[in-house]
Amino acid sequence: MSIAFVMFAVFIFGMLYTAYKDATTMTIPNWVSLMILLAFFAVTPFVWQGWEVFGTHLLVGCTVFLFGFAVFAFGWLGGGDAKLMAATAFWWQWTDLLQYVFLTTLAGGFIAIFILSGRKFVPASVLYSDWLHKLIKDETRMPYGLALSFGGIVTLLNSRIFEAAATSGMVF
Image (tube, rainbow, N blue to C red; front, top):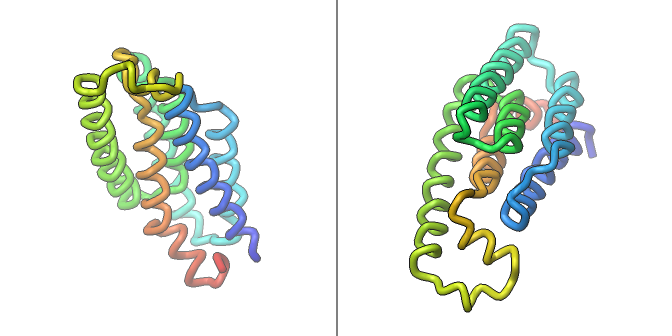
């Protein structure tokens, strides 16, 4: 098993853990975003594609960080969501970022429809667990970490960094 495989597993574990935590507590721990960011820097030497590609990864990550900071400042996105989005973006090149944004937006739309339908049609008396009640009936928050996780995992499996690792035999 290669180090690249371990780092990709760390990414996927982080995203799955994020989905779980955001669905159950409406929070994304800072250590998850940091772990995903550090995994990118750990995997990079093993899938090295040159300084130009590395610079593109840094540019994409920093651009998404600034965007996330702005949308957080306006109150449109939670701080954990913004940090996770930025940490995840370091793994992408521009075409990967487009796919990530598209998939995350699509998943976010489905999740929003599901939750908003639940808020309207599901009576509170059938929501026995606290986390499910909070997820469905909290009218001020939406767990966008679920969508970010979905978009991140699917994008990773189609990303250029994953493709470079797979073709070099580093993933499996």
